[in-house]
Amino acid sequence: MEKYGLSTEIVHAERRQQIENGAVHKAIYTSSQYAYRDANDLVAVFQGQPGFSYARQGTPTTASLEKVINQLEAGAGTCTFATGMAALSAVFFTLLKAGDHLISSQFIFGNTNSLLISLARLGVEVTHVDGRDVAQVRAAIRPNTRMVFMETIANPGTQLVDLAAIGDLCEEHKLLYLIDNTMTTPYLLKGREVKAGLVVNSLSKMICGHANALGGAVTSTGLFDWSEYDNIYDDYKKDDPRAWGLLQVRKKGLRDMGATLSADAAHRIAVGAETFELRMQKSCANALALAHFLEQHPGVVSVSYPGLASHPQHARAKVLFGDKGYGTLLAFELAEGIDCIDFLNRLDIVLLATHLGDTRTLSLPVAKTIYHEMGPQKRKAMGIADGLLRVSVGIENESDLIGDFAQALDYYS
Ligand SMILES: *Cc1c(COP(=O)(O)O)cnc(C)c1O
Image (cartoon, rainbow, N blue to C red; front, side):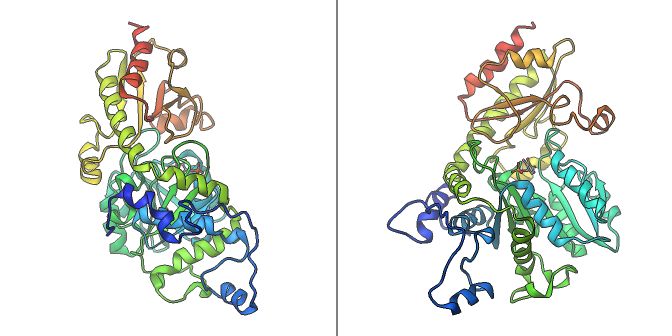
């Protein structure tokens, strides 16, 4: 589809949209309002012409980033938000209503799980399924099912649902298929390749990549025909029915949630995105090497990483991602007798922090931190062992990274 490779396209994307004084970056537009000399032009913007009015609905800086993200996903249109959670909220709250049924993967980000609990309290029926088996998704379909929601590589367990088969199922039943592509990113997988209608990416993670800005995006693949979708307001039933859904997410999502991406954050994310492909290549390679190292170490009892032959969905990962890599997230359990807190404290270059997709390698004890609020019973049901460690692999030199884990493990041998 694109003329050049991913990195070539992205590093030249902003500059090629519209050169303003020869700047290679889009300017950071701080104006919160946009004025017009001719009132007709103001009216035209309010009535759907491209342009800007009030910055909650977007700025030239966010519009520029939207083109970049859209290019990454090979999408039909993209709308940015202040965070990944804001992007997800905008999709759920603008496209679902009380009485609708949502099928969701059971392997989802903890905060998204919290969001779905809020949605259920407002009257949306939510069914959680094990998406590794498409039959479970099929069995959950009801007459009022409106949307099927899946994440790609699950955090922290790295389960990989049957994304392509679920895409076929949604196509067959004309259901909206929403994918959260944050953990795979459009480097490993584009939503359209598995027939998703909408794709959410948290831009705070690998796409920005330097832990210096928050952002989120909703991309329409253009594959879904919204003319048969129940919840589109008449105002947004304009022109091509394949564009209605994103128009509603943009108009109502930005207006009602008000979680607009700031121009400053949009600029930082756009700069980060220039090296997105390079960082993904390096982090995926580091993650695979670290997974192999940990798997053979006597101080480690198990490693979850889709790139290992021992991973239950390794074959699926190969088909979905080709030879590009297997993601930047892994999880492992230490042998009995090694205290995970004591182990973490022995690491030198690994940061003890939450967050994912940074240039720096990060690790945390899952049960005591991000899944603490959930309680022991639910953790057990989700397969989260007390000593499970999550690692978000960065771009450090491979030997330094493995050396750091090796020296910490060697203390116990
Ligand atoms: C981090 C994350 C989010 C939320 O993104 P924020 O930008 O932190 O709000 C959503 N989904 C997944 C899979 C994530 O990892």
